[in-house]
Image (cartoon, rainbow, N blue to C red; front, side):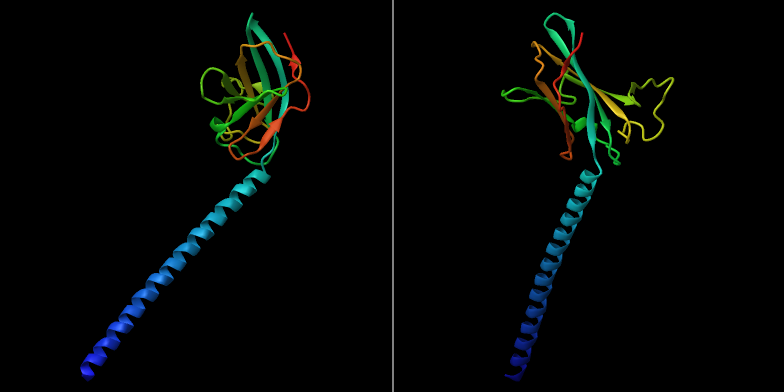
Length: 177
């Protein structure tokens, strides 16, 4: 009988160690997941704080009757390099109507071109050598949206980056020729 008591005690201690190991492992895994999530959120918030964009020029232009283009320039005024312009969205706000959304790369309606110091980049004369294909501080993007309606002077633009930072026009769109 004494041997059975020893075996029962050994099994009990073994089960206690296994359960403790599983519980402590679960707690440590949960703590690691929470810690990594908090780190990612902090890095995202830090990136947002350093990101600033501004729409510097925008106007309508007619090419053929019934086809209008909105041309605009957006300047990176922050201290962050913006690497993923392919997730940039542009909204056209037309008075009290629902905004029209234009996604980059979703068709022929929205095109964006790199600019350097406000002028369209010519790779032969002015190549982008620092962080190619990334939107560096001080650089511009030129955007063009094709629309098939007559513009009004109270239409406004809003450019939204993937991290939630946005720029919007504070004055009416200029009707150019």
